[in-house]
Length: 508
Image (cartoon, rainbow, N blue to C red; front, side):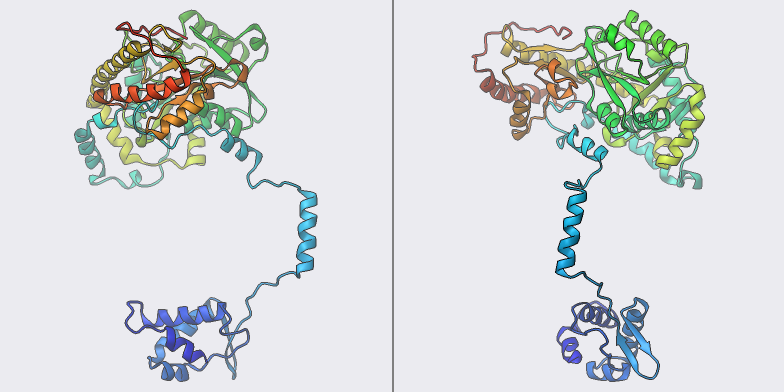
């Protein structure tokens, strides 16, 4: 009987109100067919008497079941269970339908082709902190005290428009602070209105692709180059033409020049991952080519602040007189990746459509954090932090150079890069599987990345490891590299030779 089932499961000591308990028990009884379709429920008086509960408890449960469509009231007859079981095809019909679907779509994937391509070529790593993880700054050195104070100020009593969707390309004082900073630090020529705040480099690139390209358009990318750019291009349906990199950066051949792209993606100030710097002549040729053919140059000013051998070079954007350069920047390396703030500096003609694009696609916000960042820059904390970290990272680079020299000078292992950035590249002989070495290193908590995965063309791949030194404390560099060297030596199968005391880093 229903009353026996309810009495068995009704818990008078429970913190859940009795009316809620009764409703849930009755619903479960209907769903499990303890109460079958068309079964009549006891009257509210009858059930309240059997359960020794208030009649209102039963009335609440019945009304809730009625509202959700589990029961219906029939005039003069009572309350009955409704049959809500979906009609199922017979086994024969189900088998026939499955066979038809399999014939029509023999191997229908769960993901779209774009989704499959994105997942198959995913480059993000699950390890984002630890010895030699590339592209990660030392977040333990961040000046938390002034940042916390400025954030508290921004959140103390924010205006209503700071807590709703942001409009207009970002918080204007932040755009003004960025325009001033970039003019001084990177020779970027822009007005505050040309700066659009984004959630980082990936969102900036995605906006460029969505607003300035169509599926099938051609894009030049550096080879080797940043995996994130390649994956965003694939996901947007663009054709990718890998362009070789030499000591002067991206080096298009005569054949490349005949295939005019919609986009040219470059990291001219510090090529990622090899570290070369694009010379002045190459920069001028690239800008002239873009002007003549109407290409968009997307300049990712990667790690430009961290140059240890002289002043940072002039940005491409600062040399552009034809407004063909879109300049990308981020605070992930100069502050901390979890901040998720970046910016785009746009040609004047693109400002309005890009602001609309940000509003439509991403519903921008986070104004209090942008307000704190604006103060952080204008009060001098940002420039001071960069100056201090420049010294910290330079010392770590030189320490890593020395340990490599002591261990591998004169061997087949060599380092390349430039006196800039947060990583260097350790080149390995062809017989060394850099992916396997990276997997073995990860098992030991060492986060190197294989150089070969940064190449688009299999035939041009070189084996090597990216070693990030930004997030490794000085005292950890030597023991961490010694642990990595043990793994490397297994693959090299040679004894390390006695070393000189310094290894200069040349361009690969």
